[in-house]
Image 1: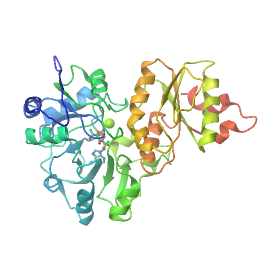
Image 2: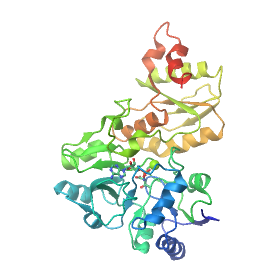
Image 3: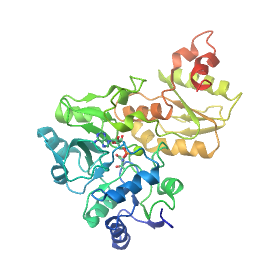
Length: 371
Ligand code: TXA
Ligand code: MG
């Protein structure tokens, strides 16, 4: 347990050496540093120091069977930490690194077991954020880092989110303002043929296919399977995630239907609860609180605002959040993956809400009231 957290404000365009050196010396000494990446803030420790890595699990309350992403500052480190890469690894690194793509590869035996949760594979990425890269370089070691939130909460897209979850559990927070992408990196398993998306994220399925041809997507990552598969490939897939305190319902379907259905669900729920909405396109809802993710044709912006919206609705003290669904192409796939997880699978079809004679209560009851 850390006594007191030091917070450094850093300007991305003019990075001062002193905070970076201080943070790097904390990493080398086995401490914890929260730092910005282009996706979300990470909670970092020396990937080669098992005691330091154990502090990450403790601070987040993270299950020990959920491995960490190892952050590197040079593409070559993929080959130092990983094994058995073919042309696809090279093509992906060339096109997407630094950037929001995590590659799962056979691990080097030098990596401590705790970092990879005892797996034969390791997840590696080179972030596209100058502060992250400077920190890794100055630390002279790869940095293992999950998102810097309490396990199960929405990932932090600002230093303030980190501080609220982890103050006095982390030695240093490097605050470089809000992150660009807002959802986490895409996790791509390169140990299978074809490669398999375990978590959709900042690099899209379409972009990956353009770069290397056939790419599969895990049914759980797309939300096709509601049940937990027996052997989840990515241990993180089986946990409820990204969840605000409020219970979340996602409404999917055609855009106009979604809006009508969301309002109907909200009106029903407001009889018994305070209800917030995650909407879009400036559409007004009658609700207790509203966050708007911006125009429907700009899912990148929506991704950037999503986790913040969920946290803010929690701050407003709503009991339930009803979220509009998004089309699952481009980064929309990542948005829907996070929303489904936040909702713990409580996803309803707009059309069935709007069907004549349907009462919202019976539609929601089994799932909400029963759980
Ligand atoms: O954008 C990101 O990826 C952020 C920033 C901080 O880099 N990090 C992040 O880490 O989201 P985390 O720990 O919240 O999510 C890592 C995901 C988990 O779902 C984990 O199960 C999966 O990657 N993972 C890690 N190692 C793996 C492995 N060897 N095989 C399969 N999945 C793995
Ligand atoms: Mg996370």
